[in-house]
Length: 205
Image (cartoon, rainbow, N blue to C red; front, side):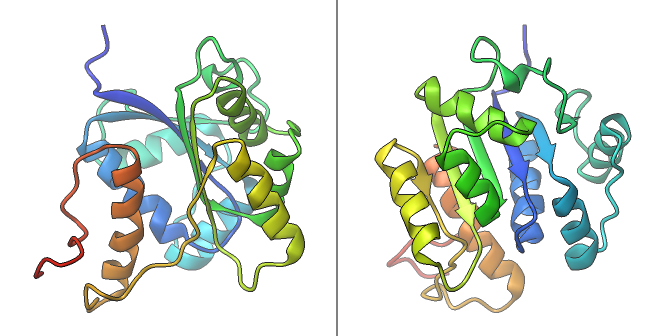
């Protein structure tokens, strides 16, 4: 019997926004969630560029590094390679019913909107959609082209939540971390995971 509160699939793609993903992992670990993590090749480049985290390409090595980095429990974080088709996330009979792509590149957005499954991230998203689960995409691009917007509309009409990385300022952020926490707090809200990292509208900090 699992000792975890729940399971979630988290995919990190090559859009800018690595701090969002890492803070989300930190919060999910603290909330005792088990994380199936999918990281694209482009995302590893962005992680190194934005936060100087050199994530190994080998899934086992990446799992060990992140487990240590976040002081996670054994088996709390599992990294899968892009072609590990026998992983739980590739099948509706085993995949978690909840998945977040954070950040979500517009290329991944396009592939998911068209039901393509050329890698494990796209397949995992396809599984969540077909199983009527909860899929949240966090695109980070500006400006959005008509193609991007059409793809978002297509997914939204399927029940996918589109949550662009667009932090608010009403909480008077004092640091970049405050802006990151705004977005991660909103994600946690949509996951129904209690959080106190983001002040509520109308409440003093």
